[in-house]
Image (tube, rainbow, N blue to C red; front, side, top):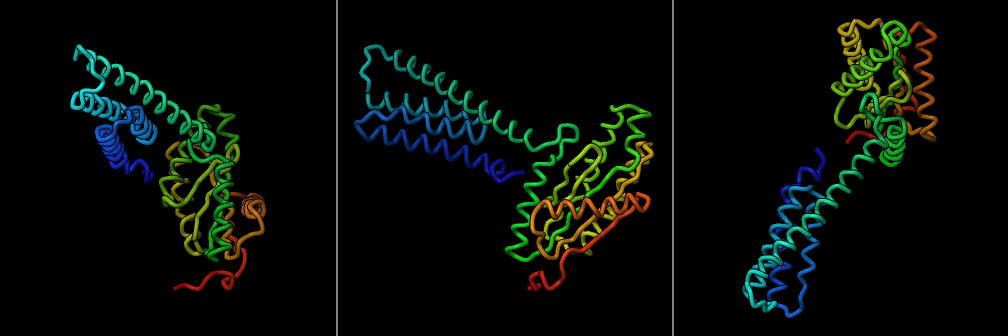
Amino acid sequence: MSALVRYHPLIALSTILFAGFIGFLDYVTVIDIAIVYILPVGLAAWYVGRWAGVLASLVSSGIWLYDDLVTGFPPYANPFVLYWAAAIRFVFYLVISFILAMLHEALVTEKKLSRTDNTTQIANKKHFFDFVTFEIRKARRYRHPFSLAFMDVDNFKTVNDQWGHHQGDALLKTIAETMKENLRDTDLVARVGGDEFAILLPETNAASANEAIHKMKECLTTAARTSECPVTFSFGVVTFLAPPASVDDALKLADDAMYTVKRKGKNMIQHEIFGSSEDTAPAR
């Protein structure tokens, strides 16, 4: 859960208090600032959602109506006009809040699609590369190790040829779900090719990476047997005690390690270490 989602109730409450503050200013000043109510309505709709926009619209139009009733401004001969005007404002705020909420949802969806693999719903290649770039920068600054793994599904073509691409896609989804379930929240798994996956293990030394990848391979093997698919898994793992020169260099080392497994006969783990213990910061 993101921090923003976690604080949705607090944000919604803040917009309501903001509307109340505007109402107070509207009451004590002679300048008509009622149009400013659009701010809490917009903030609620954008940062929380439609329900908050509706609530902020109701509160804002209600406060505006109350100010008009208390101050007697504007001086309508028929009090019904005030209530009609409040209803019009409420509808106006609703339209604004719905437009902003829909726009925000569209932007969030577009952002998610730009970094998510369509088949497996995990990170795509571009998103993974961005994360590796960030991790390399962290490693240069703090001298913390990290590990990178490439995994290839052995004999995946056989699944597509014998059972069709639908079964192949189902297997890829199972693999992605299994990998996500066996990683920490701080780790990232991505699909970087047809049947190739990559794993980033931030701040992970060789021993921890070795344990995590062996556990991952066992879980994947069990999932493949359950799916009755004749596939195995080849892993190339690199633990970086020193940061690589570039993200391309890091990915190439992991990719080369994976293809070493392929040449040796598949269904194994090739774990290599880049740098030495002197390149990492001493433990505190």
